[in-house]
Image (cartoon, rainbow, N blue to C red; front, side, top):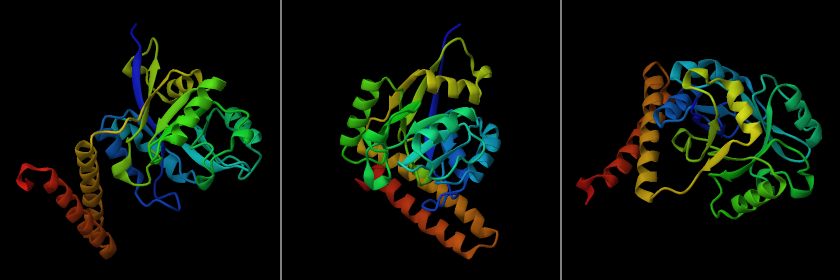
Length: 261
């Protein structure tokens, strides 16, 4: 039986995070539209929207996997595949063990980056995988350092968008190779096993600027359409938000079209 290739963005934020504002329905729609097989909502120290997203995922043709970006005493940790909140600000190693005991996978996001609460090298003594490509890092140096660390220590490497807005979902993602499986077999357990076993490939190379801008514009238009619909049902703020976004998306798409030349 041939292996199954699965594409997952394991680090995305929704309106359940203090620093993001998009609903999980819109995130799931975007993930399905751009060809992902799943997306893990990992809000900061909150799991309610992730649980809801995992329940809705099948409606979008996606595999549902809950998760959370939990604050430990040493920095942030992605608890992927858990359905309840890990202890808050507990010692790092204890939190990793808690995640494992609850059937999840402990992934270290943006390691060594102190400005984003990344776990420092001397504190990173145990985990299941390391985020070696985070799409929010502008220089690439931290990504390269994380990759070297993961390779030296034998940890699987994952890539993620760390998206805080719908247009950025899937900018980086993890490809998993699952042997002896078909699309009909795909579920959260298969994905979690593949993450732990290291059957991962990082997909996060920069796209040509025109393709990247077009991708952003399409996502922005989808987001704007959603808020325009919400506004039509009675929210003045939502309508204004939608109108602004539609105008911005239209401007971007026009710049990419032959008419602008």
